[in-house]
Image (cartoon, rainbow, N blue to C red; front, side, top):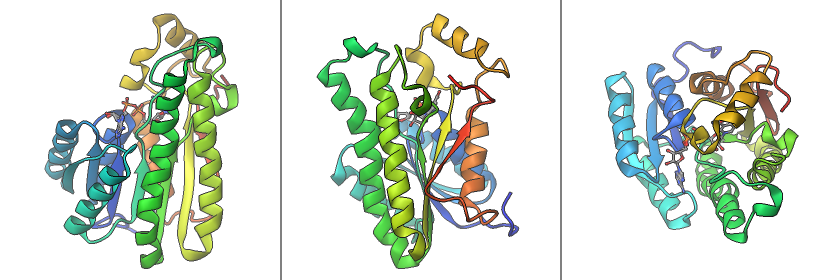
Length: 253
Ligand SMILES: NC(=O)c1ccc[n+]([C@@H]2O[C@H](COP(=O)([O-])OP(=O)(O)OC[C@H]3O[C@@H](n4cnc5c(N)ncnc54)[C@H](O)[C@@H]3O)[C@@H](O)[C@H]2O)c1
């Protein structure tokens, strides 16, 4: 929990991939705290539905189309968010996917490019567009989604995705270290399997093996990841920067 009561009230979070899974849970948890939520997604209708739910839950919400792989789209969404709420205190880069499962020799260039465009370029563009605003405020927190797959390499499942998340992890370190002295923190979260539509591309055997290999015998829930987004954005421990936090229930694979 934050050190300061009502810390999140009237502060603004810009979320990518907010229409589903971890992004959606994060939108609702910030709504619970009375925040302003700019819920963005390539799925514009889904983003609007979440924004409506944010309002019903007591926050202020706006749903905005944003394709994170397209700089114009990101700039437009950030401008809309700033127009509506005047500031962006937090950026949560949740949009991401493994696109499809593939063993190393099965990865074609199209899958490679799509995966890096969405997970790496998308995170890069959103940070590059939002950071100047945070610097002008002298404060801001960026949370990126990496993955526990950076430790396993996604062996025989999704090395394209695991390596893209490795790039997100490294970019997070660089950004966090470059801007820390100017008030902007940047960190990433690295969960093992979380129960969201992300896993629709996983076979039943793959999911069963992942659950069996987890000491807690289950996947994480999107709310468990979203609560960590809230904690890391808070003033409870501002020493978290340029690093990743693993949320795995003890799973190493
Ligand atoms: N679920 C897991 O097991 C898991 C584990 C580790 C890391 N992650 C990461 O967590 C993040 C969130 O995943 P999730 O589980 O919520 O997945 P999800 O599939 O439920 O949600 C992903 C959202 O991203 C959106 N999206 C896709 N392409 C986009 C684009 N070009 N621009 C904007 N939005 C786009 C989708 O429409 C969707 O709403 C991702 O970065 C994922 O790689 C997930």
